[in-house]
Length: 425
Image 1 (cartoon, one colour):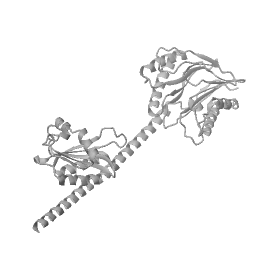
Image 2 (cartoon, one colour):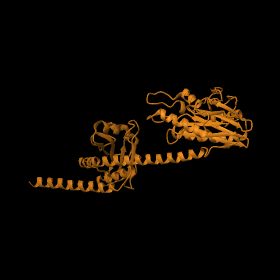
Image 3 (cartoon, one colour):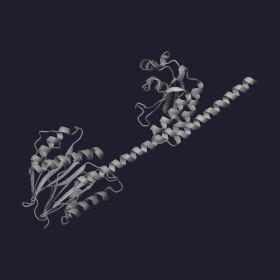
Image 4 (spheres, one colour):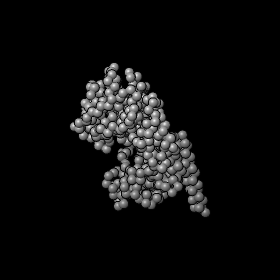
């Protein structure tokens, strides 16, 4: 009877100790936010109460199952030699396969874990338990080297298992918190990038003798890869550019900013669009990734001669709207940045009173509706034919609104950018 009483007392003391430890862990992590803080406190408490020299938590990537686990290590005893412990394939494989606590009190003699024994000579013993969230394994808690040369026991495994079961949801919540914080930071960065990108675009339409000029840019995402620009060269010459960088988002926007910087630098140096674009193409080919490309139209508008001299590099053909005809100007060369020694040629178009020129990106013509029908060149040409008398600003807004109505409820898939140059009657 006395043995039974002693055993019962031992179980009660163990239960009380476990409750105390769980309470300590709960209190410790209740005020912590983020995976780093939460896992550090969990490992710290487990190391402390199990009498281990070192502890670690490995968290599996919830999306990429092939990614290596992320390690969070806590060393308690400054007198011991810290093991720069990385999860061994054999250890993680065993826990993933069996999903049960693992006790190894002779790492060197256990043939299952020869990779650990060979890499860490001062690793004597370990205990590992799975971190499970319902039926999903999210990671592993592991303690290394029991203090004083002792061995890990079943009581240690029981304690660690209870802590793991109580901590899994907290760790997952912390991971979701970190993800949300990173997403918020990314959104803040994108909004900042959007402001920067818009600051690089013309703040207002240019005022030029004899011409009415307007541009419009509507990105498909917060930031995009389309670009238009008005570059004052001298009082009688205005540089006009429109470009489309392949791709979307931040990478396309960064490349667009580089393009603008290079183009402005070259445009100011010489009035010849051909020389400007030949030099620009050579520069871009030096750093442009082979998977990227840029289409562009750049020209110089001679305000006195009413003449637009331009280079088309793989871009949508500009549309000339005359008094008696509307035509796409097909002359041009290849996209920028592929062949550094490619030589572009110039094209001239006279814009007399009552005539205009439209340059645009393929976000206009390739916009699709719910039936996957594209807006197309014919709709754009018909719209220009029936709205010859509109101002440049009115025309670019009309085209944009027409495309938006055509798409209906289909989200915009590409940036919309266009520039109208009109010589009023």
